[in-house]
Amino acid sequence: MIMNPDIFKHIELLLGSIGFIIALFFGIFLMITKEKRVGANIFLAIYLLAFSLRIGKSLFYNYFPIDPIIRNVFLGMLLAIGPSLWFYVRGLWLSRNSVNRTIMLIQYIPLLLFVVSCWIIPNNASTASRIIFIGLLVHILLYGMFTLLWLFKHKSQSNNKSHIVYRWLLFFTLLTIALSLVQIGVFMNIVPYLSTAFLFSVVILVLSIWGLRHSFLFTIGNEKYANSSLSNENAISYLDKLTYLMEKEKLFLDPEITLTKLSKQLGITSKQLSQVINQNRNINYSQYISEYRIAEAQRLLGLPEYRNFKISAIAYESGFNSISSFNTAFKKLTNTTAVQYRQSLLKSI
Image 1: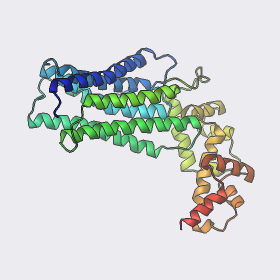
Image 2: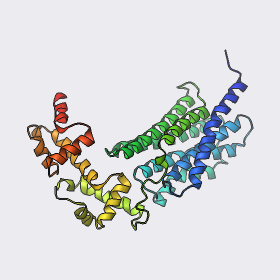
Image 3: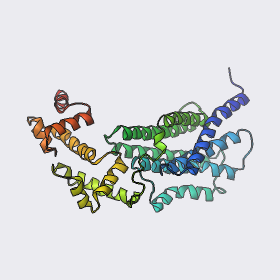
Image 4: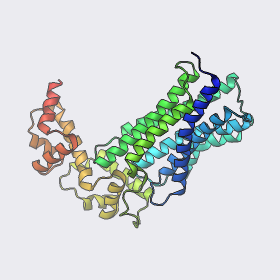
């Protein structure tokens, strides 16, 4: 039985309107309520508004004619989705409330150029028009893949809260990638037709449910540094320097390294260093150092030349000054003991 096209349009309007209304409302809400909210939310708002405007145009176009120039303006909104995804994910994971404006503007230049040129861009069934549309979808896909790789690279074992943040960002990115892939597949007749409005509504509903369960993702969770003289941009810069000292110079291997000693190497106070770590990683100094030391211990446990070393020797080689603190940290970060970890490595050989 073939469904009446008019009935199909009404169903598409109903289902698509759900996602459109939720995304539009939430996007506007994030735009106008900046106080006590995460700075990265501005990019989430742009993402939602861009998608909702695009979907709203599609729904409206089912019933009323729209001038091709106007259609192009709304179509160009797709170029805001990829950069907004990237800035939101990076901003929320690094707890960064501001970004370099030059870098930000460069990412949105394609959107500006598309809108300015909307009157000469074809919007019909021509080959050029089809190529442009597939290019817009690929633009989202490439940003999604880049963001996904960035997330994998920056995955970190940490406390419960940042683990939830990571899962949220991973889920959000994967849904964006999936949405673009499905639409590319539909456009190229690889997969059966699926309404963009319907898919968008499903994605928005899933994200909304997750977001409501973890509302702290959208608010500033750490207000104790509100009066700090250290700006968010400087904090990111110091975090990069700190990461270099840890990963290249391996200062964590020094069992006598302290918050005060490390802060002096960075040229900031111990309180500011504590802020850099806590605000950007959601963990304290001890946890931060322990993560590097446990990662080093895991590396050593996997090396053939360390196979006969005692666990205590591995602990001291990794920067710990006591076996008890090593055992506690190892269990907390890996959910297993060092002995069990070594045995699992030996079994896999």
